[in-house]
Picture 1 (cartoon, rainbow, N blue to C red):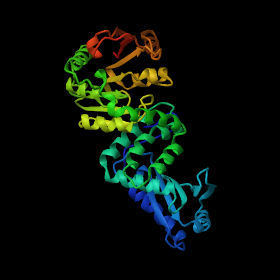
Picture 2: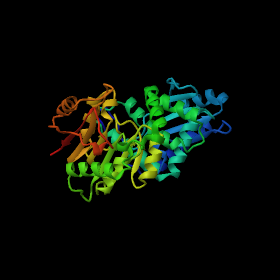
Picture 3: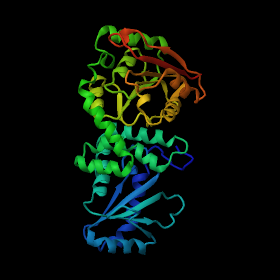
Picture 4: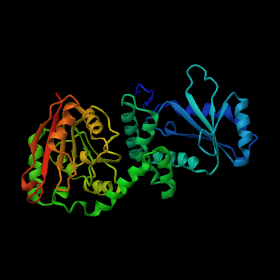
Length: 388
């Protein structure tokens, strides 16, 4: 898939390892005088089965004192030195023109033991060992590449969360992983603050009647509400629960027969997702921002977001993205409210956001106390978007 901005991501190709070996063979003679030099195939093309941009990423790893000699060796092969491009201890090169049919390549001279080298190697090894994380990462990359006009900076930032899930299984420290995230996502400070807030609430989150749906009457009220809004479950249906928290709505929708072909939950809180995976092991839960979901477009029969939209910095952009996730005939369910604190969104505000996407919203008030475990004093409402 390729966006108009030029981000191309394709399924993994069997010829990529051989392409790397051919490139490495072309470099080794010029670097043979450097003791201990390593030529590493890194990046997504180095992981069998992982969707990737069709570009070889190669780290020439040397000791610090060998960097000038390694740079000179590559220049002697026709590589044009471009400096570190803002990344300390990593020298970038513009490669000579590749013969017809050969892959594009990014070649770097890197100092052994530095964080970016250990990051590349750690991510490669985890993804090679964990097909589930590899496939989740590939799905995110393909989904992002399908978005029209996506800039490379946003592409890198929005796949950072799933990268962090893999790096959490590596030998990198928490501080090192945080630094990697910060480098890839300039908005990491805001994301981290939100993440920490919801992590702190995770253990007690399901104690609220409408969060955990533990009481049979509350669960039945939500089940009946959704069953009346959604179509008869199809054998090939997929569902997405945005801002899924501990996975309660994912569980409820699966119980109604939806999501036979897959159920995806997305949340910014790692601790919430831990609880969701324990609650609903048959679903796939991804770490990410509901405002910019890294999910495939036109792929979901049901998309739900409960008490999420009001908290996002750009709700209009979020609604546009969420509508694009729907398959033909799909339905988007938005549960929102105007809380007694003054925060939130009114039904009129949500209807206006939906109308801007070109679809007619269908709304209803959610006044039944059974939905909330008791009487409420604020205005809570539901908005349905139904694609033809």
